[in-house]
Structures are given as structure tokens and as C-alpha cells.
Length: 117
Image: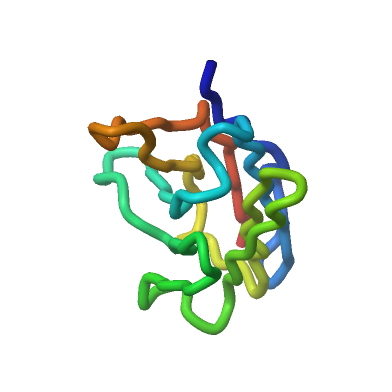
């Protein structure tokens, strides 16, 4: 069985911080890149950040310098530390990876982040 389970969303004022967590089943975590996406109402889903199995990271321009993605292999968990949050960061944040021979897509259920002005 494979799964991704996000947590850590909530309501925060502009300028505040949140840390999101995504726990993955062990059989898919260790050798796979992990990513955070977000989707705001009426907008397309967009890539926020990725982290490779070796720890290399890539960020969307809109979050560079404010967000940090990291992974803790012993806990099969990927994190997204979000600082200096802005109202435009409001969205459902989703964890993503691919697994298996055919690189099947796997999404978590999402966690809501709301930033008030």
C-alpha cells in the first residue's frame, strides 16, 4: 500500500510562518524525489518546490527565499517551511511523488493554508 499524508496547514496572518509535513509510505520514499504543489481557487495547480533523493532542491520563483523544502529519510517525511507568508500563498498544498516501474503519480489529500492580510 502506498500513501502520502499531509499535515500542518492552517490560518496565519501575513508575515507569519507555517511548516507543512508529508509522511510517505517507506516503500516509496527513500529513492524518490518529492514535491509540494499548491492550488488556489480558480487557478491551475502549480509546483512550489521539489527535493531529490540526494537532497537537491528546486523552487518556484514566487517562493524563493521564503520557503524551504527538506526531507527526513528516517521518518519518510518531507517538510515545507513557509516563512514571510503572503495572502497570495493561500491555497491547498499537496504532496506529490511518482513510484514504481511506470512512475505512477501519487498525491496526498492536501492541506489548506490560508494567509490573512
